[in-house]
Image (cartoon, rainbow, N blue to C red; front, top):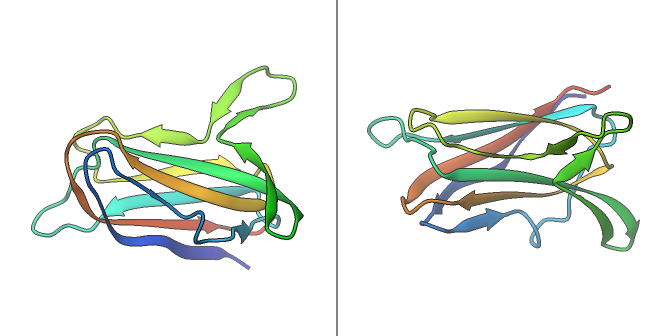
Length: 135
């Protein structure tokens, strides 16, 4: 069954502000998916909003007990490559009004998604959705 859900809707981030799903959210079972695609955008009020300075970070976890998780963090090394992959992205282009971040599933639970405003500008009406197809 395909996955398509809105994780964050109509959020305002002040300069240096942060919005995260945890601790008010207890994860999403993603073990049946190979990749997750996160779509971040801001609904325009009169014209498209730039997302400059917005950072998105994805954290996976493995359940080990009643509401206890081992976290995979947002840095992952793949066997045989020695290459580090970061499940995060910061918008630097002033013309970016929406982005898609695609990450492989590395643990059974999508534990947290963090939006951080790394700049001084206020960002309004932010939305974040996740979508995927089953393996």
